Length: 469
Image (cartoon, rainbow, N blue to C red; front, side, top):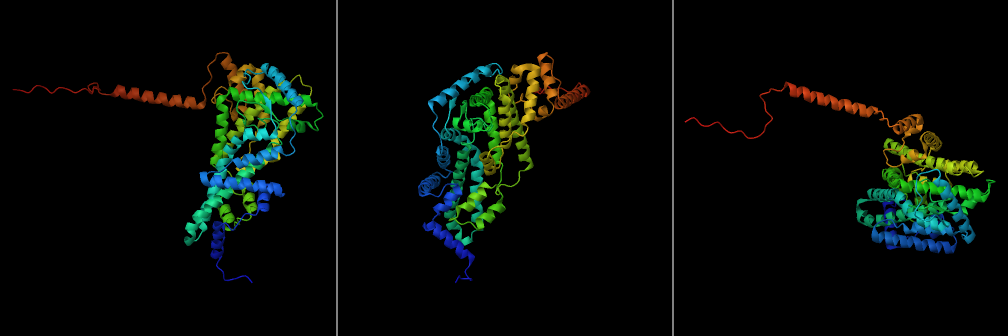
């Protein structure tokens, strides 16, 4: 019969003592379910070894051990993976070669210095994981810190010293579970993406790559010859990579915008308090669910919404430019339009793993104005040509804005005037600033005119008159 008079604080103290004594273990089968792994003994053993290593390293270094993310992602990529045959590598090498020739006719951007390559799913995970962890770390750290802070605030005063030791363990569990979940997301992404630039952001630096197994899956049901799909996607991937190689500032700008947005995310302390009050270390599924369903991340602030709108505009400009250049380069492909429409629909909706990443870090990488941006780039190309169009990527101040997407005619008029050698009309801000400066100059001149001529601005010391004898 349960002791109805037992103080709930005693239960809490008993739980903490059990944790610190090492007697309260984590149920491997539940942890496997939390991480999305199968419950077979081999997977359980591998998962527990990863978890223990991650916890030990995190305890020693104080940060999140992202190696567990890579291990999880690579393992998923290797499941049901097919080896890339020499024949496939040759097919894709030929597709990249033709794509290079076609792009040379439609863009002024130079070719890559590195050779485009094919990647397995596991190789894609390895190559892109550093950037995924960079994007996710601010949110993972915020969740872990908030969880431990709330736990300390809720603990009785006599338990504070013991809680100081327990919260480190809780923080380690939270960080490691987040890392494992990110590995699941990236691993699943490796089964969906077709290239290095497929999700819009530059996951690979100065490099282009296609994933043959996923390209084959992409082409299923399209009723389009596989070689045409391969060639179209090779052109698109190379166009994306060329853009970021030419506009060196763009990759850092985009990544900085995303990480700054992620750092601005604040965790819902009420949700954390509710989680901490009933947290059971033997049931990590509860913690995983809270981390991955978005419930810990409150609605975006007005500042975040404004930053998100700017980010979406940049993504739309990038994707729109790639769409236009790819369409121009693939006019020889009979089914290019059908492949292009499939790519656009795919980018507009995102796959399950991409949606999972959005929930995990509170950020969707969606180019919502993709079609409008592509229409703007088309009008610019028709009016002033590819060279002038591409020159707009030379500096952040030259890149079209959201207003230019709304009104491409105004952008085209400015570019055409510049080509004729006409000085651009100053905008309202420039006019107002010039009026202000002119007003200040006129005020200074009027003050100088009214000054007493006997007054001197000479600050040099004056000699005293000679004394009268």
